[in-house]
Image (cartoon, rainbow, N blue to C red; front, side, top):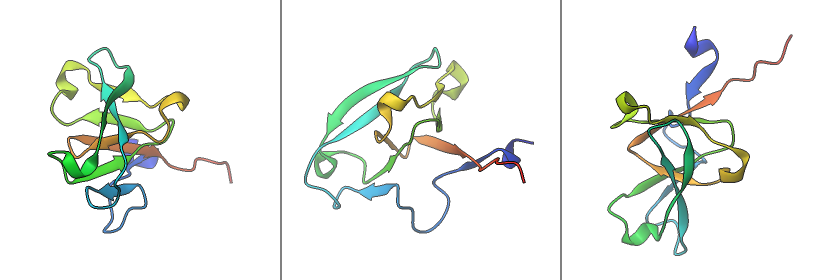
Length: 102
């Protein structure tokens, strides 16, 4: 079953991968998920000037699902080249569980 393999990485009251618009004065790189299942670098934004107040840092191999456009195929795996990019609350990020053999 899927919950045995991945979990939503945004769950929990405190998340080390979450920043707010008040946390940084610099810019962050957003991730864009295309309808063909690929991701690419999106806009570079200053969180304090964004319409969003919360952002989530993604890691390579995370599964990023567009909450708005998943039905159109906007679901992708984050490549190494975009490790550390951010998504808004309009995305669900799933992370693989540690599946090391016991």
